Amino acid sequence: MAATALRKLRLTLEMIRFEHSVFALPFALTGALLAWRELSFPTAGLAQKLGWIILCMVTARSAAMAFNRLLDADIDGRNPRTRSRHLPAGLLSTRFAWGFTIISSVVFLLGARALNPLCFYLAPIALAILFFYSYTKRFTSVSHVVLGFCLGIAPAAAWIAMTGNLDARILALTLAVTLWTAGFDIIYSCQDFEFDQEAGLHSIPARLGIAGALWVSRLFHVGMLAAIVWLIFAFNLGVAAWLGVASVATMLAWEHSLVRASDLSRVNAAFFTANGYVSILFFLFWSTDILWNR
Image (tube, rainbow, N blue to C red; front, side, top):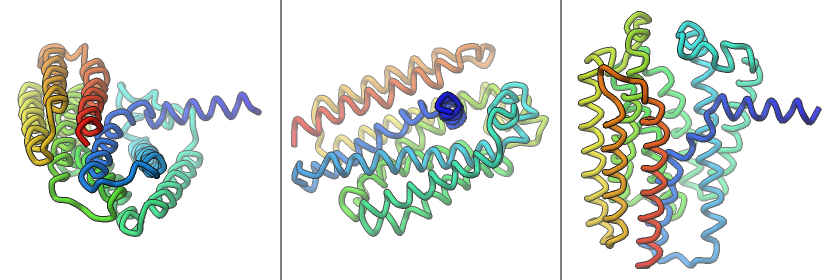
C-alpha cells in the first residue's frame, strides 16, 4: 500500500513538473520581501506569511498544471514529443487528475483566506486566469504571453498577501516575469513547430517560423531586463540588486546561445537549466540587497 502511494505521488509530481515551481516562486518571495522592507513590517510573523505564500503558490500552480494536462490529453496523445505523458500513456487516470486539481484548488483558496480578505476575494480570479491559459493556444499566438502573465501575477499577489493592498511599482516585476516566461516558453515551443502547424494550434513559432520566434524571445528578454532595472530605481535598491541584474543578463545570454533555428538539440538546457539559474540568482542577490539595506 505504501509503495503504491509513493509511486502515485512520484507520478503526480512528474505530471505537474513540480520542479518547475522554481521558476515563479523566487520572484513571488522577492515581491513579499520588497513589501516587508517598504512597509517596515516586524520580523515576527514573516516566516508564517512566507509559508502561506509558498503554499498558495505551489497549490495554484499544481491545480493549473493538472488542469492543463487534462485539457491537453488528446493533443498530447497525438504529439510524438508528448504522447508518453502520464494521462495519454495511462499512467494516471483522468479521474485522479480531476481529483488532484480540485483538492489543489481548495487548498489554494484556504491558504488565500488565511492570508487576508483581499487575497481570498482575488483567489478565484487568479485560478480562472491560470485555467484560461490552457485554452489559449487553440485560438491565439500570444498564448506565451498569457502563460507569462500567469507567472507574472505571483510577485504582485505576494505583495497583496503581505500588505492587503497593491503598490503599482510591483507591477514592473509582474511585467518582468511575464516577458521572461513568455520568452523562454517561445523557445520551448519551437520543438512543436511542425506539429502545431499540422494540428492547427497557435504559437509564435507556428506563426513566424523558428528564426522569427527566437528574435521575439530575445526582445522579450531585453524587455525583462529593462523592467528589473527600473525596479532598482523605483525601490532604491543597491549594489547586490545590480549584481542580480548582471547575473540574469548573463544567464539569458547563455540561454539564447544554446538554441538556433537550425539546432534545437539543447532546448531543454535552455528551458530548465538556464531559467532555473535566472530565478534563483535573481532571488539570492535581490533578497540579500533587501535584507542588508532594510
